[in-house]
Image (cartoon, rainbow, N blue to C red; front, side, top):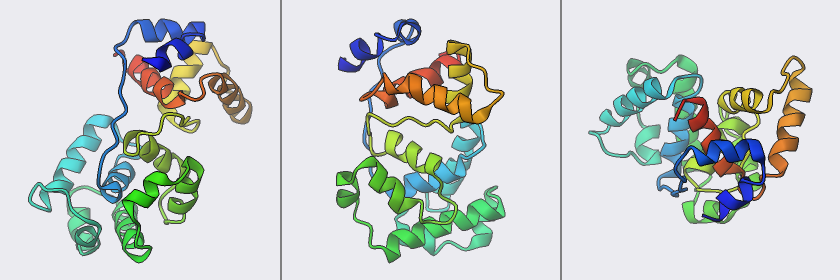
Length: 199
């Protein structure tokens, strides 16, 4: 694993890596659905998010829906599986955007990280963090650093003994540390999440 040698130059991160198995990034299909899943999981624990996503798939007979099927889903049905008004609307917004913009997954995969962020944050309800999760977990991009992710903030505060009383300075410090991890920042984030969760 190339990334382990590189990230191990950071002595604190090296101790985390030694205690864990290597992670692999596996690009996944159906980008629209994954983006909807990312919206559903906002501010929820992984466990609750999984339950919600399972209920969502059950609306389509347990199969993965295409954008047109999601866009045609009545708002009340989405509310019925436990989504808030806002999240239900955002899920419909995502599906409609993919249809209106005729988003081609192959083309999306060829775009740079920042181009993908610029395109998809045009959708109401989709912020930078949501697209960063998509880049990491669906597009399999290796060098994404989610500075606004609460889990990453908790992990880095603990591992690097950072002071987070000034949010702006705290994030700058995080980015400074993470800059040394490039071009493998996604892997570092994955290991930090696992470490924070005691994995």
